[in-house]
Image 1 (cartoon, one colour):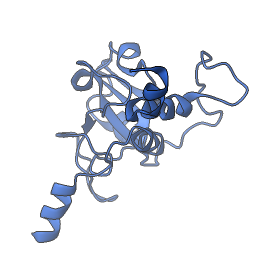
Image 2 (cartoon, rainbow, N blue to C red):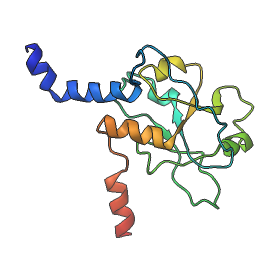
Image 3 (tube, rainbow, N blue to C red):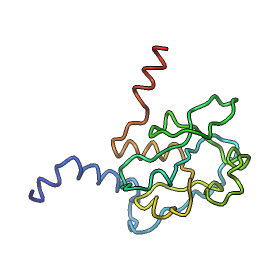
Image 4 (cartoon, rainbow, N blue to C red):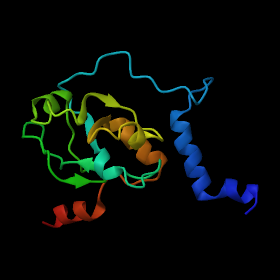
Length: 161
């Protein structure tokens, strides 16, 4: 395969789109992403819990992560059980939800602040069982990687039932 054929392949285009997620115009790509300047609202449900423990095996940037829970209504109790690969089906958490959970004092969960998704996510946080990632950021990652954001089979079953 020559270099021209490689550039037009789907895998090459997907890799370039993923790299562009983290490239800042006029900045060196090796510069790490910085957390937002403002403090996140601890009450706002906008985070997905990514299970590093279940995602880590052979994970490459561009693959789906294993997410916690099933989506519950805003006023209902949070789901801290079960896993999915689809962000629209996964539970949305606030920082306070995790602070109130029994996982808060365990030390194996990085739940004090959200992290950014990147090529070395699992390697960087391998000492933790779970990390929090902003829902919008993860959905942007899924879009760039051509990953589905919802489970069409589950949604179809819910409509039929």
